[in-house]
Image (tube, rainbow, N blue to C red; front, side, top):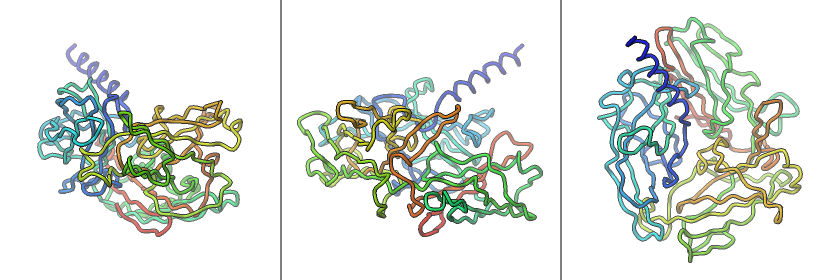
Length: 426
């Protein structure tokens, strides 16, 4: 009877954890959540197992009251489902930590409390490689969830060789990009590749259009080669930008600003549909954003907030009647799974509009469409930005391995390659 009750409660816990989405803010007072490799705001939170690498966590609570925030990690499989393991099996030290470093905002017209931390702390840190969900919650009560963020812990066993090429298909040659890669599995005990090896390919660290479930095209001894057309991505176009480092001295992307309100109201210049515009190359951060300011010393607790108004101007609004338009980038947790970043159509102005509360910084973003066809979700940049094979994109290849005696997927290989200069890194 006791075993049955224990299994039942474990099942309830797993179902509860499964309902919690990665990269989601649950408390409306929390804004500007950033998790990155220490010293590099545009980096993705990937750390080496048993290394001295650290991540910086930053976020603001606009309720302006100091609160007791705790955090923990949840180990997930390659599909971001919580694994059926006790926290003591994958965490070293305590099962939760406390965020002790905070500071009230100063100078800013909008009041908030800024929290920050260096993670992982020695008192609570992952001891297995794989996908982790960082959970931040109130007063040690996980039901009072503030937000979640993805975190990757890498045990770098595999060396991955990758390159970006143009697809062979004529209709995709000038619009798409193909990723080819190989790795040597010698150090892994692989008896059944289909069950034990899982590969994920990300474009600009987006999970909404990640390629998963792919199998090797060729297996030559211990060398696995992936070169099929399953790893083909639309090229898109360079990300749009908004320089919001100062609300008083507006950049060229700002149309107007009202500084008599709290928060401020900033109206960006309308974004035209770029499908038929000539391709232009420039440097961007592939959807990331950086908290920075030109008129204060420390933007983390002195930066101000504004309601930033975005508008997308379609050439033919009727063409979007069966599609939803989203604003995506790190400002929207990087994907179109966030319903709060869906634009609303203004029939009077014949434009799509969205307002986001943003902190001073430099933001990169783009527009995508989302539609459903035969129960399949289609995410495209073709109707909003156009697709070009020349576009600079970053691609990240993640390789997971599970032995027959384990109940979790180990992250044993990861590399990131740039489509333009072919430089690999982690």
